[in-house]
Length: 97
Image (cartoon, rainbow, N blue to C red):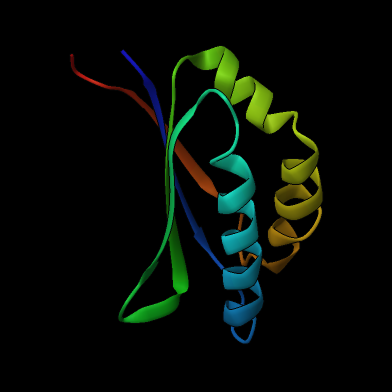
């Protein structure tokens, strides 16, 4: 069983390109983490301000390690969150074996 995190967020108008650049870099770094099974940032094709991230980790400890990583602090907490209109929404799931 894996831990899945779904994150929904909305970036301010005009910040879409910068958010996309940050997410591309964050995804590349996160996918290298040993406990990461998937990290898929996405954008609504009809609303470039609406972002969605599908994250999958081998266990809660791997997600915790992701949140404590240098790249998360630098890119997400350090840059991306400043571009948001409102706090991000996070929902947790477990895969069905």
